[in-house]
Length: 586
Image: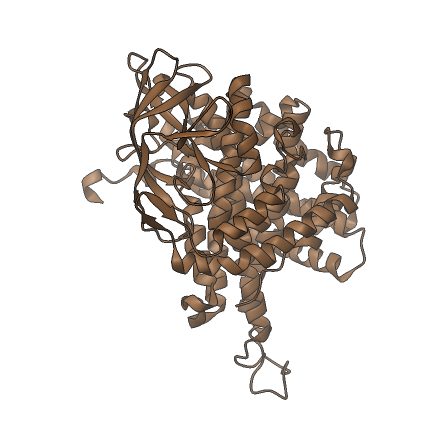
């Protein structure tokens, strides 16, 4: 199995030549010159390659064990966790007042891709902690921030989010976990939560659970949900750890993948918890964590695809099978390498064009998050809110597809565990499900995000694409190969949005039946827009790297972007083909 190679050259190119981050007006970006980002990404890449990646297969084969109420993580995980923690990587973009580095989120996204590509299961322990930090940072009181955030930022404590219950997942209005008010303003939390990633482990002193629960007497449904901080160990006024709280891990789930991450059934038996924000407003606070997590899950899909592609490309260059049509590529050997065959090239180009376009898309989305949070840019916030389900849904759907293609490249060896690609397939599969299954992401995109603010964010996206095409119309190197396909794809996206506006009110099923196709159509246009921007930057260079970029981008525009026409045709077929059968006919 090939070793993980951090994509440092590509990240440098995307950040500085495509996105031109150091020229951005976003506060903090002026410091992000090439030397600065190279130092950070280089060190993060070394840790990913030398510390995290060697433990990926270990975590997969050993998994986690529940012993006497304590989860034991795989061999080496604790030492690797400590390496990341001691280096300050868990607080890279957290506020300096709580011990963080204070860097822009885009740097966390770039380092995060390498971490999930090298060891997704291990990265989840601090990835979820970052989400808990964000929820408390935005919605907690000053006292709560002072008490909980420094140890979360340092990694001495980790965090989780607890939403799902045995009888309810997406429909949170059905949850039953109770929060009984106490005289000291705390609440006693009683209930069971399932699928809690990193819910129990042996790598941190304390685990801070963010738990959704209902206060008796509150409104019915989702309007009655509140959010609570529920620590594994109670914390004394001086910051020291007190008694064990009344909560426990009742079971570890046996899963298809991410075996190195503990997926727990958590039992709360009158555990002491502390209200975050207002009573009955818990979903608003939790969605701060959820939206961040959805971008992070998009990076997981991208990272697994990137890691699997590296193995597939190396294998295709080395494996001798058959002869090229025409002149032999390896005349002195018994056969030519796989990579000479056109269909092998097609599969590799599918993967390469997705990974590199997806990386640019994810990092661009991260810059929008920074602009929104650091500059209070309402347009950027609206745009990234629109794009979040696309980042999550498209990058994980297509990322999984790429891992399967990589597995196919290895033939039978792709099905054998020792080569490692099967793990990428299994680990990537969960990203399409958790933090809101991708079908739900599509419904959110069509049902809520498309019409948000009177359609202002989606119109802003169309204007971005239109303006880019107009500004570069005179660039002959872009026009035929990049601008014309992008224009056609953007028109398909606009036509799909118009179909929903014209038909959605009178027949909601007509819109909802096309929601997944719309998400994928939107995703293709986003990557097409990224590839056009990448090509513009690559045309200014003369290295083989730049030539390869242009060839890869042309492939995406010619072979992948035309899928927008297929998705539009499906959308315009409406609900009739989808809803034709009665339930009993399935």
